[in-house]
Every structure is written in C-alpha cells, then in structure tokens.
Length: 446
Image (cartoon, rainbow, N blue to C red; front, side, top):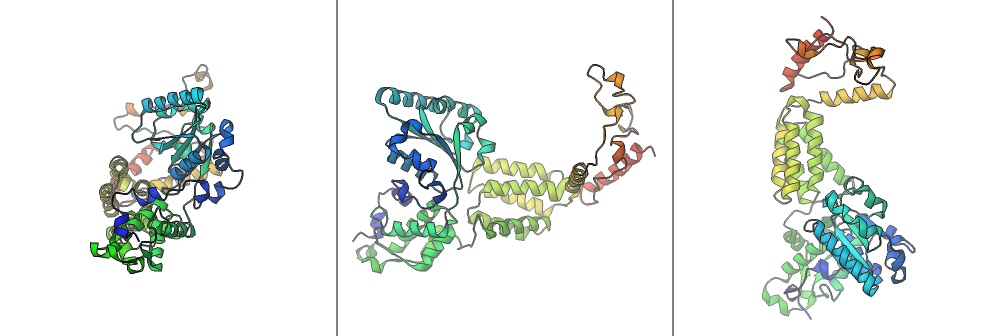
C-alpha cells in the first residue's frame, strides 16, 4: 500500500489532483447546478451555439476555477485560462484571434476562463468585448469583488452574473473524505481521525482549497520519518495536532459568513473606538489567522478613522487609506504590518464622532423635508437671465475680508440657525471647536 510520504514526492498539489472532472463531482453550489440551469446548459456539448458568457462571483475556494474547467471538459470546448494579474491587453487580443481562427477553421468553440477579472483595467476589459459579443469565446470570468463595481457595464450586460456561496461544513466533509479515499488523493494511505476532520472543516471556513491544502500538509506530517513508510494505513493516523501543526495556527472558530465573522469585526472596531490597542491587536490577529480578506479589514479601518476619530486627528483617515493601498499593493502576509500600524494608530489617537453625527443629522432633516430654497445670494448667477432673477445679488465674497469670513446667511430660511456639527474638545478638534464658535458668531452678525 502506498505510504503518505510517497504520495507527496513529485506530485501536483492535492487540491489540483482532486479537482472535479465533471459537474457531477462538484461539491456545493447546488443552487447553480440544478437541471436546466445556465451552468448545466453551458456544459452541454450540443449547446455550443447558444452558450452564454458568465461571471462567477464568490469567496475564494468556492469552485470558480473548478466549474470553468469541468464545463470545458464536459462540453468538449477548448479551454484557455488567463490571469488578470499577469495578462495584458495584448494577451487578450491574441486569445481572441486564436479563438476566431479555431472556430472558423475547425469549428472549435473556446472557453476563456479569466481569473480575478476585478483586477483588469477598463482597457483590458474593453478588449474582451468583441470576442464576447461576437461569440468568438465563451467567457467564464471569476471575481471575489462585487462585479457591479469592478466590471464594465457592457461586459456585465453581455454576461450572466452567478453568485457562488461558501461551501457548507457538509460539503467540505464530502471533499475531505473523498480526498482521503480517492486514488487521485491519499488513496487511504492514512486514516483521518474524526477530531482532525472536524478541525479541517473548521479551519477551511467554506474554502475547499484551504481544506485540501491543510489535509495534504497534515498527512505529510503524520507520515513522519521514513520508517513509517512501510506501515499499513491503520498505523498512520492524521490527528488534530497534525492539522494544527500543518497550518501553524490555533484551531480558531471563525466562520467568515456567520456570527463569528461579524462578532470579531464588531469587537475589533469597538476596541479601536474604546482605545484598547491590545484588544484591537488581538482581534486583528484572529481575523488574519482565520484568513479574513485583508481588504475587508482595511475598509473597516477607513470607516473607523472617519466615524470614530474624525477631526480629533485629521491624519487618521489618510493613514488608514494608505494602509489599504499598501495591503492592495504588497498583499499578504506582509500586509499584516500596515494593517497593524493603522490599527495601533487609530486605537491610540484622540476620538470624535462629531462629523459622523453631523452628516446623519443633516440627512435626517433632508429626508423629513427640512430643506428650502437656496438663499438668492448663493444661487448661480452665470447663466443667461440669472441676474435678472436676483441670483447672486448681495453675495459677499469672504476673501475680501481680512479674516476670510463675513456675516452672511448660507442655510435656507427654513433651517436658519440649525446646528449640525458640534465639535468636541478632544485632540486637534479642540482647536476646531474654538474656530467654529468664532465663525458662527461672525456669520450671525454678532
């Protein structure tokens, strides 16, 4: 019987070996694989002339690449894969030209799988349009970002948008059991103990690739020294300790789509708001170790800087934005460093939610009908006939004043005297508070 150690010598990764060859082998995504669904129809070799391009949107490890390859095999089409990280406009055009040649000369349809389409520029996405529109290729694009914000409208309108869901614990269990028993996988060269199986499911957080990668590493550790190679499968057991050692992290309970996901990010933001830098670092570490999308963390830091700090420290927001840019630029694991720097800064600096409260008060007034006509001096006086209507009449130019502020009504009559922004005396906003009070007295003519 083949030993676990032998299984990892010169072989492709387990996640690649276990990739389904047909839609019937795909675990999860049942809502997209019902009879007559677009994906099932796309896999039909008799539907080559009616195939529709699709955009697959979902978290990592949910089967986007797997679905594209299984559809190509089942339908008998050519399969070409491009990565948005490495491919440029020239590469896209070359694929389109070759697909056109294959169709016209050999009657062969081409599936173009484009991974991470959200990383494509507008010019790169524009290069896809002729091939998609004219049917030179069937585009299957994958993205972890909302396509409404990252894919150009002409491409969206010519494609079906299909949303993939994270795999359930049951789906992951099926995949793990199959990988242990299947000849393509471990071929029963090691026994997977129940607690180790549970740990793999828990750590995967709906990501099939992560589950199989961890299983492969744990099996290699369980194989141990070379003297274990001669043992029967019953002598080699993969334990929870092997799994923990393989992934080099604690067995955290963290469901990226469930309560724990929201609980941890909530605790993270509230710790920053409460100025507890140590607690904030703890929750940041939990998210990083659980595989949370670092861009999600960075976005929440930006919101925190504007919502909870504001003008008490005007440097907080640009620093949070810089951290987000850094994470996007350098990726993980190094991205944890700018995330930690931003977290420490936001947690330890002065806090104020005055700007956040101000806009919400103003919006509430507007939504309740609390708005009137713009005062005549503030209206646009540049278009023909505007001055005859009194637009701009009486406007006082602030720069003509030595102090840059003049007594003048800016709010509509209905809201005159309304106060939205109430600065605190925290941090640098203390200076803003004094300045705002002085300006308001001048505006009121005092």
